[in-house]
Amino acid sequence: MPATIAITDDDAVTRETLKSYLTDEGFDVLLARSAEELKDLLAASEVDVVLLDIRLPRQDGLTLTRELRAVSEIGIILVSSRAEKLDRIIGLEMGADDYIAKPFEPREILARVRNLLRRLKAPGDQRDDRQRRFAGWTLWLDRMRLTDPLGQPVRLTGAEFELLSTFVCNPGRVMNRDYLLTATTRRKTDATDRTIDSLVRRLRRLIEADPADPRLIVTVHGTGYLFAGDVTQDDPLSPPGRG
Image (cartoon, rainbow, N blue to C red; front, side, top):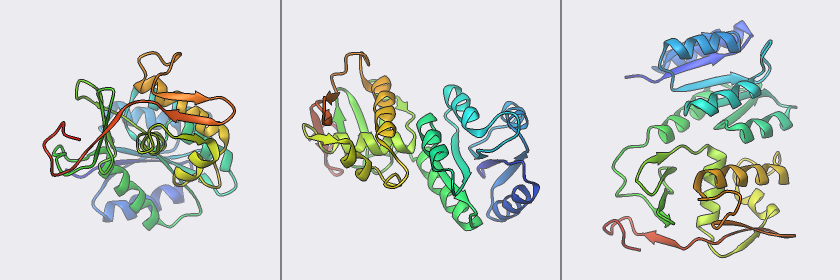
């Protein structure tokens, strides 16, 4: 079945232009002018990805992103004006998967949507994927997936995945915030030290037994962070469990 995209923007031209383009590409498209209308759509329909304008009337897209992420694993792509770099940073910290700046080309929106859908709907056959295992967790590097010690999938935003991948691919290495900013794609110009600290807090809540006393992502005071967990690496051609 085709994926369903909800376009939320108070500008009618933007809504209709994107609807026409994405419908021609085979998607089901729903339209909302405000946060209230989007909430009604989500209550009535199964939606895969939300294209969410940051500047909405009454309730802004950043606040709505935080609310959606608290209760849902829906894909969220924020749309912001080019000058609003801080908004894009905050949006990623609140759990958005991606952002795109206005003015944009519909073709770029299409590419972002397809990339996000591939990650959200990764195939179940994981034997041909690079894996990193730590403390019972498994990170699938190629499919951008994380499974917990019981084998259940755990939702990661794009920013969370990028940072966790950097940690597990460099165990035992002290990395300062500048390095982590550079290693985390799409955040070389917009991100700040606060972005990394916020992402670390979110990852600790996900993977640490006690986030207040972290044993995996350890703070190195005055420097940055270190991944202290034991990491094993699986060859895609080897049976599961072999490093």
